[in-house]
Length: 369
Image (tube, rainbow, N blue to C red; front, side, top):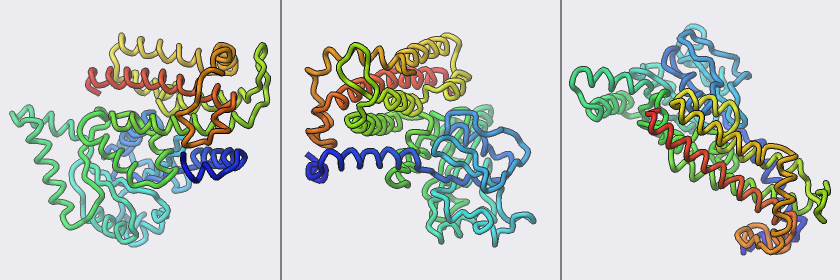
């Protein structure tokens, strides 16, 4: 038993999980994406989000610092390189309020220039995590193959060149990426390293919102999803509001619908994320995944669907235990019928959502995206 939880009364425990859920929902990760136009910043943002949230183009479309590209808790600030007439390097960090950012991704499609190196040094001075990304590595490898140079040789040559380029600048890491192939090269490592550079609820929010590009990210998403279900279940223990016809209990159905939506978002089952993934799949795989998602949303996606599930599990749930959650929520709450039913259904939501996510992930790997 978690000693801290064990010493709390049920109301204190419920209050804690309610606050944890609010902190998760309200967490914002400010990420600066800095580089010249044409380096693939917008494509990088879309690959991180797993959705088409940034307009892709060769023309610089820098927006006001107060208007980030936003997805749930992810706030991307698409910024131009510094040391221009409009954005002199001496005032760059102050101009864009970069001191408030959680991380900075410095982007190039060839090499980093003098103004980039200056910016890195200034960011290090204010202790901002800097991730150096060299995009379009697939193009470099393709050119190399045409000249008889292996992919491994090209990768090493490009990496060594960037490492030499950045020599003496302590960035958090160097990453060779391709927005068209987010499951290859260093893209997943970039996301994982950003995740580990964050703290507390920002970590949770980040992993919940990003694209699934590796087994490690999938595993982290499961941990977050389980936390979300546990928090909603704890709230359900105290929120016996709407009676379920034919069942002698009450539950807040709206709470369970919100839980379902959170799980769907974590595993990329919403419409926007599915549309993003489908463009990389063959027709057979796309049709299969779409069918599985439709089945999932029909089963868990709304009030009526949740009501049907509650009726089905209510006759057997009393015999089940919630022992898995006891170290986290306390015996009194875990014994409650509201907690049991919500956590039972939530566990099934996670299981089925993860199965679809794994099938999508494997199909995307086969297609080479």
